[in-house]
Image (cartoon, rainbow, N blue to C red; front, top):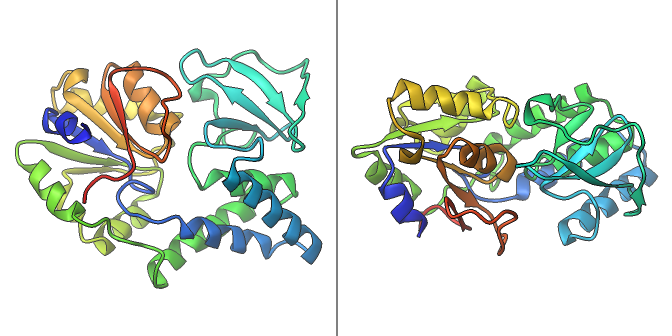
Length: 274
C-alpha cells in the first residue's frame, strides 16, 4: 500500500537516520558510550532501565515527552498537543501542579522538553536521569555516528533501496530532511551509495520543532499541493504528524501494528524496499 502512495506523489521527503538504512545496533553502541561516564553500579542500572524500555516495561517510550526539568515522562498527543499524564521512573503516575497543560512542537528545546521520537532518545533520557550533561550526551552521539561509519555491521544498506530510489526518481523530486548535520548526512548518504538520488538535502532540521517550516518550504519551492507530497520517516512526531497537519501524506516506518492516531492519509510499514 505504501508503494502506491509513493507512486502517486510529486515530491517525497525522506528522513535519514532509521529510514534510509537498517539496523538498531547503533543505539546499543550509543548506550555503551554513555555508560562510560558512570561508575559500575550506575552502568548496571543504566543498562537495566534500557532493557526495560526495549521490552516496553518502562514509562520512557517512543512517542512520550521527557521533562528534563522535573525528570519525569509525559504522555503527549501530537495533534491536540496536550500533556495528558506524567509518570516517574518507577512508572507511578505523578501529579504535577506547575506544568503547562499543552506544549507545542516549536516549544521543544531538547533540554527541558525533549520529544522521544526514535531510538536515539531513550538513552538520552536515561543519561539525563543519571546526571550526565547534555554536552557529554551530544559528544557521545557524535562519536557513535563516527563509529557507525568506521566499524563493520552498524550501517546496513536496505536491500533493494538503491534501485527503488532510482525508480522513484523518475518524474519525482526526492528530498532528504534530517536532524543530522550536513557533513554527517553527506557522509552517510555517500557511504550508503544513494546520494545521487536526492535533489536536495535539508540538514540540521531540528525536527519536530521546525518540521512544518521545512515541509512548507519544499511545497512552495517545488510548487506542489500538500496532497501531492509524502513524508517518509521512522519518527511519528518528527515526520508523520507534522505532515498530516499540513495536509500531506506520510509513510511511517515502524514495527508498530496499530496507528496511534487514526488517519487515512498515512500508512505503516516496517521496510521501505525489498
